[in-house]
Image 1 (cartoon, protein in one colour):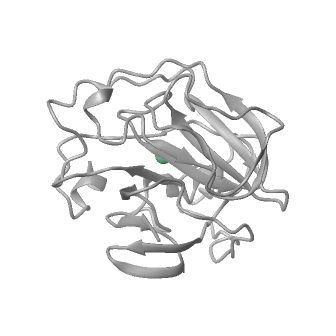
Image 2 (cartoon, protein in one colour):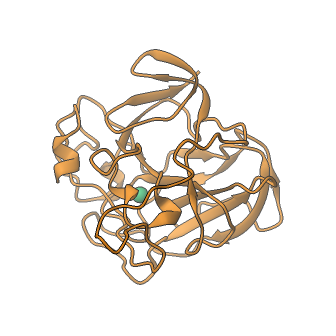
Length: 233
Ligand SMILES: [Zn+2]
């Protein structure tokens, strides 16, 4: 909830999130976050925002205050949660159906060139507010960028992923649609970059995107953070 209050928008729905148990944490014996040698990592893959139109960053950034992903799970430490917002709201109607949410079913694209190395496409979408804690990632894909970086796109709408393992994808190519599957309170895209093709046992990497607008300011290269409205060039 703190997260929601921190945003510039008045969100009337509670989104999110992946609160996943994982042995690989960055919390030291003293209970504080360890230093991360990847904090200032420069992304090798040329990444673009994986959608069209204007979107809103619900969670992103490199501090725990900004980004609930930042601790304790190392693989998704720099992850983004992204929705669409119109007039300060993420949905029309009462928000009790996935179809009420502006982002639900919207096209998602590959953020960078690579090869598809994992696909799950058969997990039911949740009723908003109800979590699937057994299949926490829901429907997802992993893209191997063939340079030690792997993109993880999570919570797709059931049955909408149109790529399969082994496929080569290019930046901007459609891969599926936004959904609400897995450990997700409401329709959104969770995206992060990591060091392996396995979702649980990787190191999360900061990701810089190319050529986008953050709150109308053009970024040739940048890292979206909580509260920004972002749009591809
Ligand atoms: Zn997330």
